[in-house]
Structures are given as C-alpha cells and as structure tokens.
Amino acid sequence: MLGMVMCVVTVVLFLLTILPLFSFNHWIFRVWEFPRVQLTLLAVLSATSCLFLNNPSFQFPLIGINLAVACYQLAWIIPYTRLSTKQVQQVAQHLDVQKLKILTSNVLMTNHSAPKLLDLISKKQPDVIVTLESDQWWQDALSTIHEDYPYRVNKPLDNLYGMHLFSRFPLEDIEVLELVEEGVPSIQCDLVLPDKHRVKCYFLHPAPPSPTENETAKPRDKELLMIAKEVADRDDPLLVTGDLNDVAWSPTTRAFRQISGLKDPRIGRGMFNTFHVDYPFLRWPLDHIFHSDHFGLVDIQRLPSIDSDHFPLFVELAFKGSN
Image 1 (cartoon, rainbow, N blue to C red):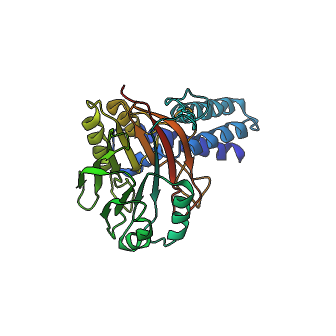
Image 2: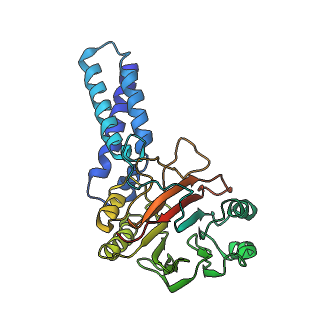
Image 3: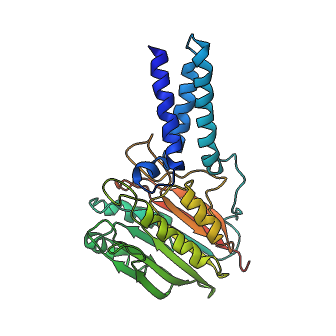
C-alpha cells in the first residue's frame, strides 16, 4: 500500500515540476512557479518516505526522481536564501548619506483595519508609501497622514486595482497609466530627493494568472517586461516596486531583472514572503522592490499583518551616487 501511495505522490510532484516548462501561459501551467519551496519540502519528505519501502526495484527510482525534483526546485529558490551571495551592498544605518524609506502594502480592498497600517507608518516613518487595492474608503481613511505626506497620487478603484502614492518628497512628471489592461493602473513619476537627485519610480500591480483573474499570465508578463525594456537603457536612479503578482524566482521576474539590470535586495538575504498571511505553509514573495545600482541597502523587513492577505514590505535604501 505504501509503495502505491509513494508512486502516486512522486508522479504528482514530477508533473507539477515539469508543467511550467511547457510554453503555455495558461494559469494551470504557470501557477506551479509559485510553490517551489513547498514542492522542494514535499519532494524531500517523499524521498525520505521511500526509504521505508521494501522493494528496491522501484524504491531507488522513486528516491532518485524525488531528489531530482527537490534539486531542480532548490536551484530556483536558493538565491533567496542566505546561502547565496548578497546582490546589494549593505550600508550601515549611521552613515551620513541620503536615505530613502519605502513602505509597500497591498491593503486588501475589503479590509478596513486602517489603524493598523497607520500605526506601522507612525513607527517606521517611511518617506514613500504605496498602497494597492485601495479604494475610496482607504483614501478617506488615510487622509490623516496628508500633512506629513503633502505629495500624493490618488487612483481609487473598487476593482481590487486601486493605487495610492504618498510621499514626503516632491513628485514630478507624474503619469497614471493603464499599460496593458483597462482598469489595471500603474504610477510612474520622478521622486526628487532632498539632495536634489531625481529617482525615476514605477509603482506596479499587474493582474495575476488565476481562475478568478486572468486565464493566462500574458498580461502580467507583458507589463513586467515592458517596464524592464523601458528602463534597460537608462543610467539615472531607478526604483520599481509593488505587488507584481509574481514570485521572485519565476522565469518572468528573472527575465525582468536580467533585461532591466535592476538589483533585488532580497538575494542573499531571504525570501521575505508577503503572501498569504493566513496560510503559513502557502507563502511566497509577491511584493517586490527593485532598484538601480545607485542604491545600497540599509534595511528590509516584512512588517506585521494589517489584516490584509499580504504583509506590508518595508525597505530603507541609501543613495550611493552615480554608477
């Protein structure tokens, strides 16, 4: 009986591993790029269970397949562990350089725990705040921070793709664009730092491939790669952040980094899984921040829950100057 169970488990893990390798954009194929950590752990557990089988004729092949699955999945996720070299230089907090603190939060439109987000803002004192899934209710609830954040971009929507931007620093050349899909906006602007350097910023929230959203990953991938190509030839300070509805280790996000040349401060430091708050075993990094080589990292944290399905992400960068 155990042998039959392990055969089925091994076949399922193998199939879930190879499905993303097919050149199909349907969510049934692409969704298995997300749980690579979970598939790695399950493959190791399956290989261990196979040690208790009594028939070597299929015991060792099953162990081999499970270990191959685990190694393949591990190759994707290992950059987001401390076993990998840090991609972004660490900068000490006490250094007297221009710093930039960013808080990104997918608030979940139906969640009304604004006081919890306001409490985090009070504690972390970010320079820039971007909220995703924020509607008119959230716009009104966050009006109490207007005095501290005089520069704002409001795009309230009731379709789960509203977006709000709050900044202590001036925002110029602001554009609110629907790059790929109607009703799915992004914000592009120049952030003017106190030392007068300008940072080109992109705040994104493309729709995910899923049975309740887009049937395929094509719109999301198109938006991410469109931005990657746009910034690839720029040599000014750049920042891209938001809920990209893609995991850090997916082929699309990997292509985004390679094409854009932007850095990921999580590499070599950890995964900083922001979704899903309610299911600890089913978590992955959906909220991202990428930046040009003009910045070093002071701090990166996954913040406590605000009753959304996403944890907020906090990053403090230090401006190093020109490349």
